[in-house]
Length: 333
Ligand code: UT7
Image 1: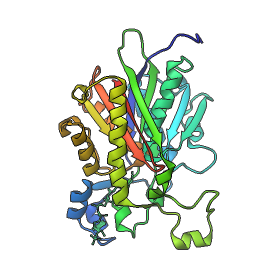
Image 2: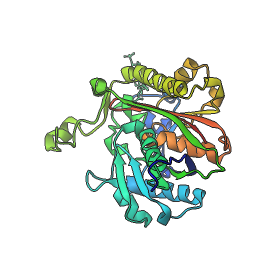
Image 3: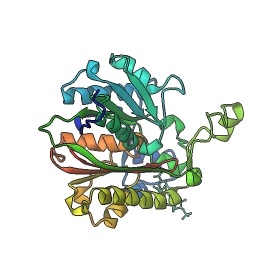
Image 4: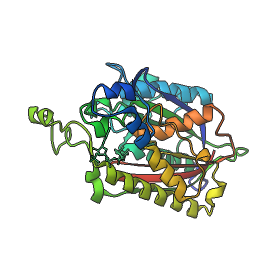
């Protein structure tokens, strides 16, 4: 490895996978006191996908990864590092990246989970870029995957309407000399002072599983929705501002914004802040809901596959999540 030369990163392939089972607003109307109209108006969500019994995060990751590798024209043997961004790993140990490495039939490579909740994929892509940039690795598989439904209380209407299961993956590769793709700038932050806005209380050393935990429902996600909403708009706007400023690019030169898909009103507020029209924003929330670390990468894959996103375009990725974590990446696709 040449220690002085640096390289540019290029997304060489994308893939995604949504489980077959679908839970619609009309299904939820039968489970909690809510309505299709309320959910559509307040969130923009109509349906969420729910993993089948026994279908775990590494399974969803595997399908998305195989599609990304195929799109890149690579095989699992070409992968130099695996990053899995997830808040819902198969189990605490071993990490999901190692389980995926084995299921994929990849070489015994560096395999790491990234824990940054809904910002996890954006964090992961930045980590991958550092390894490609230095020349340490040529092809890094970056996955955002969640099976969230076990952590959702389907008796609580303010959370159960939001979340779904999904996985997306990209292969981040070293760009060839004649390819002008590049990650121009990134900005990531974590603010633990407001960490209590969105928590999964039990299952860690602070509150190990017990009969009481189950009785009190502390194994389910809890959030202060209205406050998260405010901070989501603020932090994503800040992060986008920072990456644009760092590369001296006006918002008008952004071809596509690919934001975390948590609530369509959050997305609209961020776009409005930058004067970016909604037809330059990739919105895929209606059919999948909030899939945490998977939202940005699934939206990216969908827009690549249906031809919205083209080579040479400037992409602005942004996310926020529990932590509170947030981030943005400005790149040439
Ligand atoms: O990835 C990060 C994860 N979390 C988020 O991104 C959440 C961000 N926050 C949000 O998306 C929104 O705050 C929610 C969708 C969770 C809630 O929407 P809202 O417009 O902020 O509603 P609200 O919390 O201000 O509640 C308004 C009313 C309340 O009734 P009252 O107190 O005004 O009588 C709620 O009880 O709506 C009620 N409500 C519902 N009504 C029907 C809350 N959930 C529902 C529901 N159906 N599902």
